Image (tube, rainbow, N blue to C red):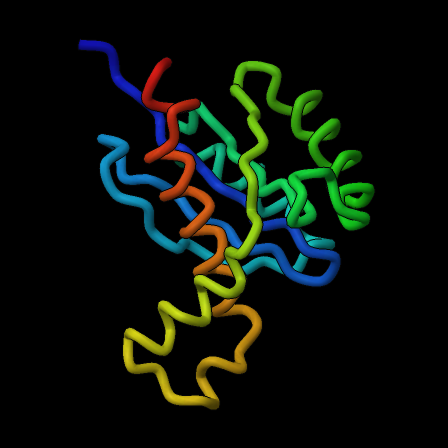
Length: 144
């Protein structure tokens, strides 16, 4: 059986970026870190040097109609850099509609206090986890 690398998910933001990763067997998605976006490239290089990652999933901000939103313009250059830096990795977009809403719901359901829920870094990390879990459950991934 071939060794599989992890799946890494990115909830890219202008200030902060949430990162989530699968376990080595690709069964469970877990929040990993919230990184200042201006330090993301260096953080990813360090992580990739330590862990085997095969797939990078980037949340694609879309409108309710499913069209790319205005914030996608900031993500496209980042993804191009990723593709050049990591040509051996599969880089895919995954719809991130409603992830912030779902993250807040998960925080409430998990019993987090209001002050904790206001921490945007926590929201970003949970959003990345939701993007990853959604991708892992999606037809795009399961039919590979």
